[in-house]
Structures are given as C-alpha cells and as structure tokens.
Length: 171
Image (cartoon, rainbow, N blue to C red):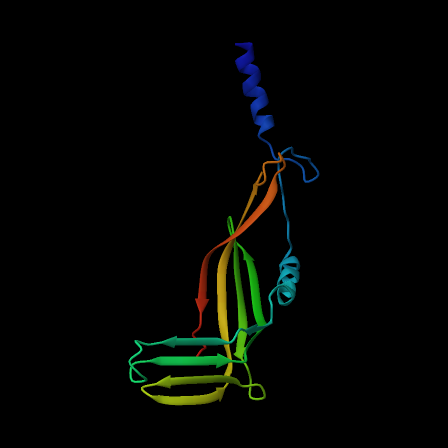
C-alpha cells in the first residue's frame, strides 16, 4: 500500500515540464528561427546547377522503305540554364513545406540550338531558342532521427516526398 501511495505522490512530479536548460537523454530539439530558413533558401543557387549543356541527340526511325515512312531528327548545341527566382521552406506539423521557382531558358537569341529533321521526304532545318519560363517545384521534407548506418549513433535522415511540378507559365 505504501508503494502505491508513493507512486501516486511522485508520478505527477515526473510529468512536469522541464526547464529550458534541462539536458534530456536521447532527445533532440531543433529551433530554427525564420531567418534561419531564409538563409537555407539563400543557399539554393549554390546547390542547384544553374547551367548545363545537353548532349547532341540523333534519332532515326523507320521501316527502311524510303523517306516516306522514315523519320530522323538531329538536335545540337542545346544549353539549359536555370535561375532561382523564389524559394520557401515553411515548417508544418511533422514536416517542412518546400517550394522553389526556377526560371528555365533553353539557349538564347545570341546562342541558338540547331534542330534538323526529315518528315515525309522533306528535310527541315531550323535554329531556335526558348524564351525563359517559370517552373514551380514543391515537395514536403520529412526529418527522422535514426541509426541509418548501424553504428549505434543516431543520424538525421531527411527525405523528400510528394514532388509537384507546375509548368503553367509555359505558353
């Protein structure tokens, strides 16, 4: 009876809040102020490759019955560039909402890509570029603390889910 009474008296004390300075074993607390998320967003241009060339592409497809049914195309000098125009990381309950807006361009007026193709025995050649257009990429970032590599130490495991791409600016 005495044991039961002592548990009833001590239990409420064990359930009280800890002070901000308290050290809790096997616990993690991360407090990132809004300016901290802004700093992460500011780093995105350094993390995302902003210019990347595309290898020349050649494709020939046909039945070998002559140019009437054979088709080929050749794409050369394609350069894609990206510019981060907007980004947000917003804390939610159990995850982070992430979105980034990229302005994508394929070549420009001073650096055209080449596209040659043949369709129904007529060969076409054109040099072109694509005006910049926005792509909004959004996702959710989930964070877990787990022993990922089996070394007995917990690591931060971050993964993205539910990617969405919005090309509505592309006309």
